Length: 267
Ligand SMILES: Nc1ncnc2c1ncn2[C@@H]1O[C@H](COP(=O)(O)OP(=O)(O)OP(=O)(O)O)[C@@H](O)[C@H]1O
Image (tube, rainbow, N blue to C red; front, side):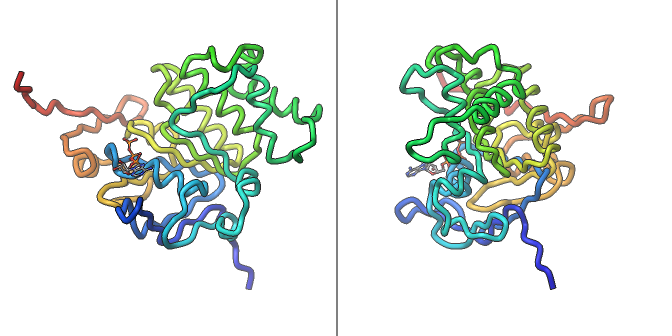
């Protein structure tokens, strides 16, 4: 009998910070082409979970498997060939040229004394072109806006040629238009075979690019499934403790509208 391994499988994982439990017993799996959007209120543990998924935080119990292999047994270099991670914010420390920052994404494929080869440079340029930002290549990374930095970091991660992209609030620094453009890029990357996990504060985004949605609250996933099944008025109220109306646009696209809470401030 042939056992097919899932691309990325999370089995009953738990994590605490110095005894303070952040989540427990979370399980899910994703395949090539999936985009999983993790929603949930502030401080619920989305970033902590994401750092566990890429090996930055060590889980207390459970297993995280890539193609059937436990990441516990993999070095960071090996994980980097499978998983590309973009944190919520990244502070640049040195005025490298954008092209060189992107080229650094090839590091998992180079030995300590190797210089990048022509092929590595081509991969870096292609990544900039895929995101439509080749015009930034000679700029200093330190002089970029938050949104431009986000896209450059994504280009760098694409150079790792990962199977899985893990993005912590990828649209947080992007303007209204660039948010949609990035979600379209995510959709295209998934269609090209990557699988993507992202956290978001915008339930609407799940309808734009996701195949699966998880809502995280009270140390668990309170729901997991397709956007239509999970992003419901009832679940959004459970998650965010406000009323939300779901509306369908002409092209059948759904949008989530938060209702006023009528809270008054004592000033
Ligand atoms: N390094 C740390 N040490 C101790 N506690 C931490 C650490 N990092 C985060 N926490 C705590 O863990 C909890 C979950 O934080 P986390 O950043 O994972 O939430 P989040 O869902 O990503 O939040 P947000 O949506 O506001 O970004 C919070 O209570 C936070 O204060």
